[in-house]
Length: 292
Image 1 (cartoon, rainbow, N blue to C red):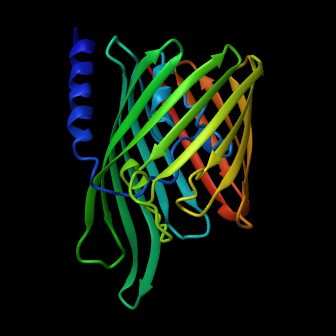
Image 2 (image 1 turned 90 degrees about the horizontal axis):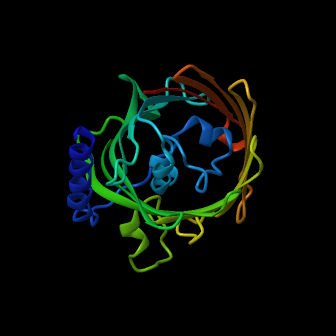
């Protein structure tokens, strides 16, 4: 009964939020340690809290409630960091849902009075529902508040994402997400911004149970003028250990980055770490998840 009431409440939130999609905001940057360790090739994987960012339709794969947190530190920017806190609820007949909060303290600026940072708060509600046999649809409604360093005021607004996932077979899945969907359906122009609609398409394979291989196309619509291919892999050991690696390569630029990571299950807890090198210039991400 409690779960049914919770699911109805969440569905209502999404319906109200859909009416507010016309407000715009840029997408988040770093969510999900496992996803980061796999190079961001996660659109067709997305079976944990990182689904909130990479593909909310993947929340239908969540089997138990969980609470998780992520911290990412930028080595090239003193005291800059990003954090992410999430609560996931599996499908109880009305869909799977998630509530999350992202906070970023970034882009330090120095002046004679000292150092100050830009701040971002992004509050998100996510919902996923089945749309057919092995087909899932999902979406996000996000409210974002942002303030630049030394600015007197802040900007705020609503935005949303839509996503889908298909289990093609027992060994393969495909996923798609359009972030900041309002921008994506606007008239195209030569003036792409960091708020333009961004489409990602991915596929994931499991040739054996322990191994996952994923491939993503980033910025498929080229609205951000930063198209890239992302490759990622994960190998899980029976002892609860997992090792990951990933590569990102720009198609229209010299952008190139590599990542690696690891995770371990301890009872109902999962502890994870990822490192982003290359053009990311060194980002350390750590995460803890409690399943109950």
